[in-house]
Image 1 (spheres, rainbow, N blue to C red):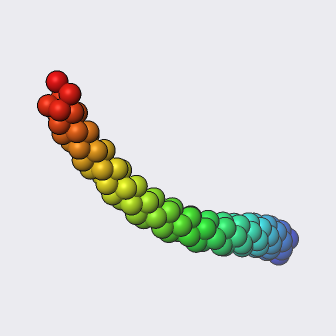
Image 2: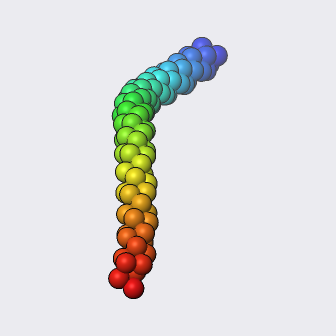
Image 3: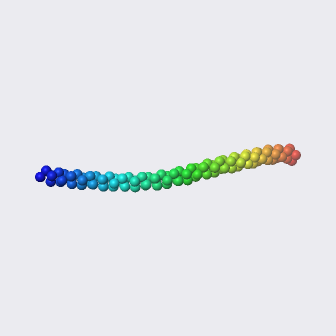
Length: 103
């Protein structure tokens, strides 16, 4: 009777051990899958970071060029305004002179 109980206990423990081992193997496989997914995600995000960094650098370069263009346009505008003021002064002087001559 004791041998039968001991044998049953051994079989039961062996089955528990097998189930526990299978659960551990399943958990290991699941974790390895998660690790692989995370590694893919890390690779994807690193590529996204590189692309975004390049895009930011390009935009900064474009902003710099746009600022330089605005400065050049502003200088041109200032010169045009100056020229128009000078022209206006000359025309006012000419008008005043003509009023003196023809008045």
